[in-house]
Image (cartoon, rainbow, N blue to C red; front, top):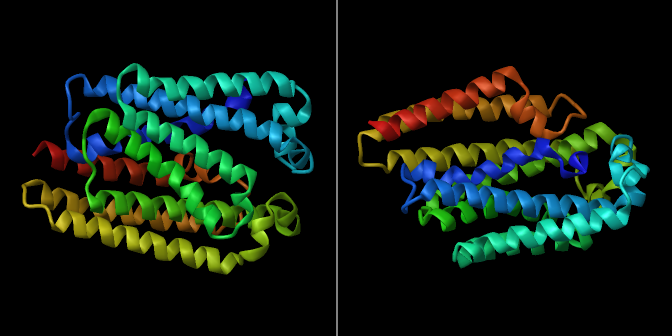
Length: 282
């Protein structure tokens, strides 16, 4: 059950803290508690998606060099059990917003579940559209955290998050093509419409646009934090460059590992965070 829940993917849910971090405020009384609840809600929702999708994709996963070891595909977890656990987690994720009377949080979690299942059912086979749906999962976490804490996100903030999410989605598709080779299309039919070079160029372009949007946001600040946030663009840009270099190495490692398990990458991410937070404290 724990393997199917994919604990290595849970750090994605920390995106609910993005709006309070960018705004340097928890927004409301007990905002930290609401943010933690939002993280738990999206954690439950994502686990629901993993369990139910593993049942739906079991036959295809059995033909995949790595995914054939997933518990449902390998026969270690009965499909009926996975469906029950997935349904329970989905209900728990939706209930979180209702319990604390934050309808926008419930709507964000519900939107995430609907889009995830639409993606798995049909939309993952439509090139480009499927990239947008993958990126939307990241953005909905950000919006859910903003709704829970009552911290309204700015337009620049949402643009930076969207471009970053699309860049990661393009990188995921490139690593699949590079790692699986000719068998990639059998695993994900939409990959027949992508070309490795085009995906790498797309990743670089989206990363550059993200840094440009970040700089535009920082330059528009009229506080003492401006200088710190402009400086923070340097490690952020370096991190995006390092991420693109790691992606291009034809590795079969999941994109999440490239972001969190490379020493230089983590150092650059922490450097960006230190400068950004320092600016908020000035």
